[in-house]
Amino acid sequence: MILIIALAVLALVVGGLLLLRPGRRAARPQQPPQPGEGAGGTAVLEKDLQAPTLERAPPAEPVAPPKPEIEIPPPSAGRLVRLRARLARSQNALGLTLLGLLSRDTLDDDDWDEIEDTLISADIGVSVAREIAEALRTRVQVMGARTPDEVRALLKEELVRQVTNGFDESADRALRTTPHGNRPAVVMVVGVNGTGKTTTCGKLARVLVGDGRSVVLGAADTFRAAAADQLETWGTRVGAQVVRKDEGADPASVAFDAVRQGIESKVDTVIVDTAGRLHTKTGLMDELGKVKRVVEKQAAVDEVLLVLDATTGQNGMQQARVFAEVVNVTGIVLTKLDGTAKGGIVIQVQRELGVPVKLVGLGEGPDDLAPFEAEAFVDAIVGG
Image 1 (cartoon, rainbow, N blue to C red):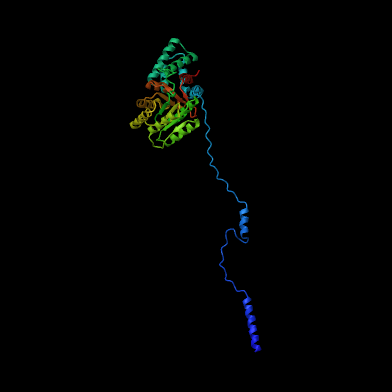
Image 2: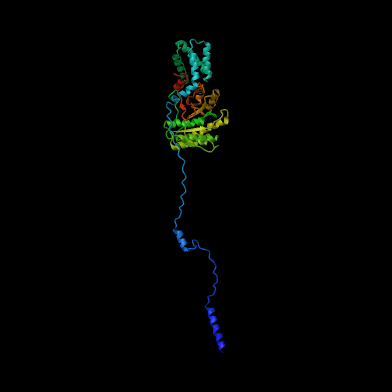
């Protein structure tokens, strides 16, 4: 009996001990760490929030290219005089030959034929050369002039007479670039390929800006890709506006827009550069007439300047005749006059067309285009 009681007590003690032992907890699924938590929990997050952050630099503003400096060209007055030495270098052979012949003690028929041939070789033209030779022969015989100064004076007087024959120097050679009320003056520049039309337009813009005029340039040569770019470069240098369109656009529409821009901007002068064209191509010449007619719907065309290469001689004369028939040329621009001893083309082209030479190009520099002055031109040929 005692044994049974002892076993019961032992069972109770062992059961109590088992009840007092903690049971094994079921493992909880592991949660992924929250952002900012680590070994330090939220303390790490707070620390991170308190840490200084790197500020991103604002994006750099695009730097605009510097505006080109506007050039101030010299005024047109006296340009030909300033360029006289350049002209004299190319024309000196003509003047020296004539002075040498005329200064001989005696002049026979052969000598006068040589004088006439010298004049013809200078592109004066056969009939004009003969007229000059005869006039000089008469005056030498009557006056008996033989000294270099006397001969030079006679030759200069005769050449000036021929250059100015039929022209009012103060009026006919003046470029009509003054606006009419609210309409700008319009200048069209025409000619064959390679004579320097676009360059002439740019240089003419410089001449006008130098005289205090405001200018719009119309890039109506849409057949040559570089023409509009070239004209824009000239315009940028002197602050002139340039109106252009894509390559192949209608030249008349470009000219029309240029004149409209000139009216809206109230400028003094619009210069329209046209495409070079062969004087033998009827279609191209007709198109040139169309450009002029379209422009005249807005404003009168005050000047049609024909650009001629002074080195082309008789071929240049043929070009001049055809252009004059199509667009009523009002003035001639002779380029490359510094590169030839054939300055007599000035006399010949005026005689043939009844149109004055208004501008001459005497080099590659930007300010080498000058208003033509008869006295300065002849002085450069004969000296003195």
